[in-house]
Length: 292
Image 1 (cartoon, rainbow, N blue to C red):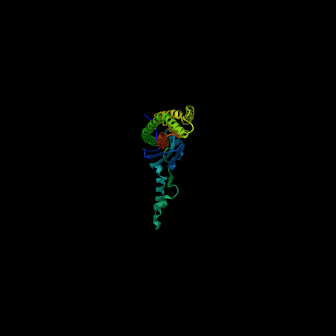
Image 2 (tube, rainbow, N blue to C red):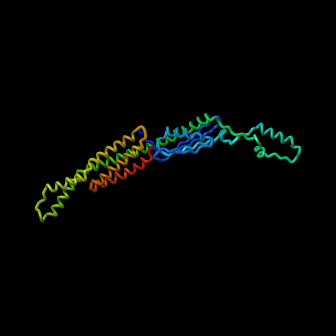
Image 3 (cartoon, helix red, strand yellow):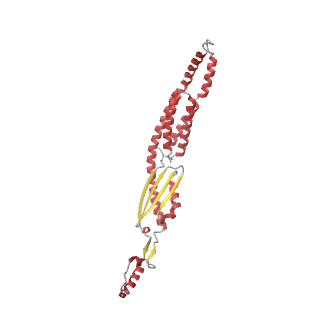
């Protein structure tokens, strides 16, 4: 079981209470850190700090955009009509209608003082509770999607890490033969070059050159570290919490050891294996960059 989570996801939720309807939408994409942006109804601007706190409880890394809309209820109205005031104006207008030439336009009447009153909206406590609850549900939906994608990413990363380990094992098995082949080539070249000068080549001279070559191309330490990094990588994948930063660091270390092996090995077969590892590691890096 892995706790790996993608940084990419989408969640939506809607709630209605006593005629007040709110719709929340949350989207997240890659980011090295946590960044929260908002698009809120004008009546909900005071909630920004509380919304960010809620996001930080549920999301650790990524660029998160929160949209919160009022799709019904009293907050959708800019103002409300004072029926008693409007009735008073209409009664007065009718009382002088006998003068003639008077027409009543609703738009004009609504402009009269006291007809339109500011909309008090819902109680702040009620609005806050409903808004945060709706966003919380959208964030839960976002995380469900991120977990599903994270699980698929974990499978691919495990397969890739297994491939890297298998190729590393082939390189490790090949490494001793590099010295044997080098010694044979060295003896052949030296004997050929000195055939007319010396009947034989001193064993100590060949051994000295082989030892120097062995020091230059010894990759045992890099192989050991590479295995260690792979073990830690798989351990981070199985952690209960998503370990994107740690995985990213380990990918860098795996790439570093691989490059060193390629530079030291001086062997075509090992060089081919190194290229295969580097290709696989780059695919792993692309996946890890999307891990929370």
